[in-house]
Length: 309
Image (cartoon, rainbow, N blue to C red; front, side, top):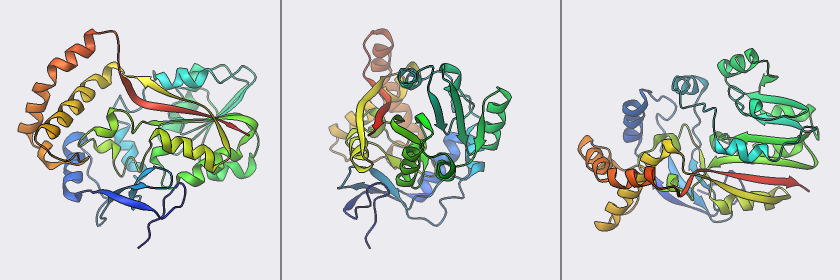
């Protein structure tokens, strides 16, 4: 059976890994206290497209609103301070009209000075919070919104959204339609070229939370597919709250190399309490080193800045 890439529509993709359904469900339950119903009965593969280098999960089993409401219970889910906001704010002028897709509680809106701001959001609770802050935020998808707002905005942006959508092609097409000619498209996503791409058992980088994984080359290919120019790809710096997962991921990779084992994003040998304790203990020294030294490696995310030609 030919499996079509959700970005470039190529059928030239290959399987990287078949996720173990029971392990994925158990890790969601033990790590986050979330019982999954979305993935029941699905054999989910992680694949890579030879045409655009996008890594994608097939089938794209997306989380429902209740799933995201459960995640919003955690304080870290909608962070008010992100380096990607500062990067994006450099491209917003006081005379800019801004559309943010998946704006959450409106953290980015409070960081910019713009002529106008509109947010789109799918979560009822996030819409309510943003409106209480005096922001113009509407519930709905960009695909529906673009039909009446084509060519209206100077800047269209989204932060940590693209990796959640089942159809990134229609998402980008609609985002570009909302832009004026010469307008700026900003997409910030978890970077598959960072430590995140080598993390083990990070269920938030798997379905039903994340449906795609973005390399730099996939982000560049995105521009070619939609007639955009690439202004820059900028990686953030490793944040304090990501030092521990960075150190742990490096230690797990080192152990795999020492014992000649293949990397797996969902790996039962690192899921036991004993294995986690051993890896955590071994990673304490590199973690301490990272907290002390001034220089940091690339962090969790990459922000791609495009221009509509």
